Image 1 (tube, protein in one colour):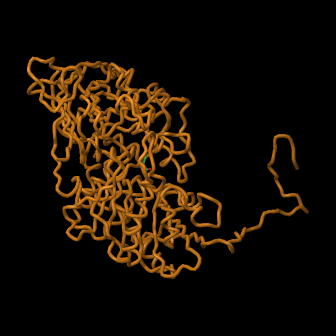
Image 2 (tube, protein in one colour; image 1 turned 180 degrees about the vertical axis):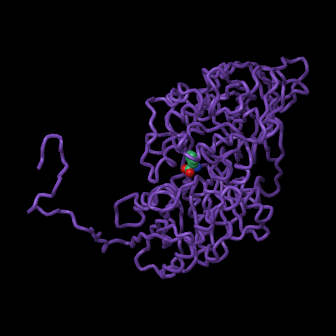
Length: 631
Ligand code: PG9
């Protein structure tokens, strides 16, 4: 029956040659050290969620460790084709060593609307309420899932922990809303908490443009079959050629995607974002009901805001002491892997293993296995610079008998940083031209798209050497004299810029940088290194109100005060404190056209204009960064 053009199509199976493929192939799992079950768990609205359950052979009274994910449960429980659970779990969202050694039943579930689960998909599905008129959300789906698990897994001890990274760290926070009684431990790792203030979608109102590809792939199809395409080796070119992010998204058909439409309809911090902020959602519900271990990464390139925002919101209500915090020198999710170093940095120990063995394991043993009270301090925090784990009574404090004081480090004439206030008579400001046609690359070009395989270094870009930027005329690099004593900081630096722009809108990027000595005997490649300790961007139109953007008055020195991500760092003697200021950070963030437009997502080509920026440093107009110095 084969004919030209019919190719491999067999119109009718030729008689006399039966298929070689069995109707249903049975995996020979006799030698496996675990049983693999795949079930569709019914939610209260009838939608069924694909749930993969891995039960260690011979399990009895075993605790359950659950992860819910939009990133494919089959992949997360199939990192290797192996009969050994440890090999199968080597990868995202699993703490494989702890799960295997602890004899846990491992459960990973596709959330509603993604991969093997039924139902429809809504990005970070909000709680039932003003943003969700349906009868279900991640709180109810988790409740129904846990209820099913404890009733259908006779091998379990009826105690469930939920943990996950990022989006999968946001889902455990949802589980804390009306928690199921069998939920005994919650571990949100690097959770998405507030998408506008400082997590994945915006930072202080500037849009994280490189996440377009994520939205495209997550929302276009149930199993992410539609892949983002570019045509440029350098993401800098893709985004610059496209003009606004709205134009790029439209060229990719993203107007079909509900979340993209919602993003463009809510560029400001309105009710859409305020009502989703999980730190506030949980704070409004009163004291924590389930022991929770928040995990924060100091070099988190994706959700550097969330965990500490939840800590700040809930700790004051935590009389029972059920809330703990672990903070390490990791990238986003780095705590589940080898934490011996990051980029050029070496920490002298596997900080990831320390976290799993000395912090996470005692926490889970206590709450899921009924082991004794874990000897855990409220805060376990790694201090960079000295490479020291510290057990702290709270955060941000630096330890017993210490106080932390917001100390101004002033930007001064001659591109200096000093703790003495600027003097009258010095040059009143520094000036640079910010040109949207030549935005400052956020890292050395060619800039890769966001990616997580071995070929991508996205996950460590926060440790990139900032010399790339400090040599540019559109970046101001203020620097101190070499320190003569250690400078220890613990908490959030706060930028206080007195700045003007010749435009009517502007972004301000402030970076606090540890400048290494010109030569470093122990690690020559760190000679003169400019390591970011804390950095963020602020979209000027929101300086008076995050909810109601306003045009800036041209050439008017205005105060911009905004928090930078938390640091727990010691600037060692011989190092210097640098503060860099610039007005673009591209293409991680979209460009501010620097003329006030109703909606930057849809700025027109003619709106993008160069602007002359001034950073003031005179008495009364003294720009500074307040560092949380430990006394
Ligand atoms: N927080 C990660 C992310 C979310 C949305 C866009 C890009 C990254 C994550 O869940 O992996």
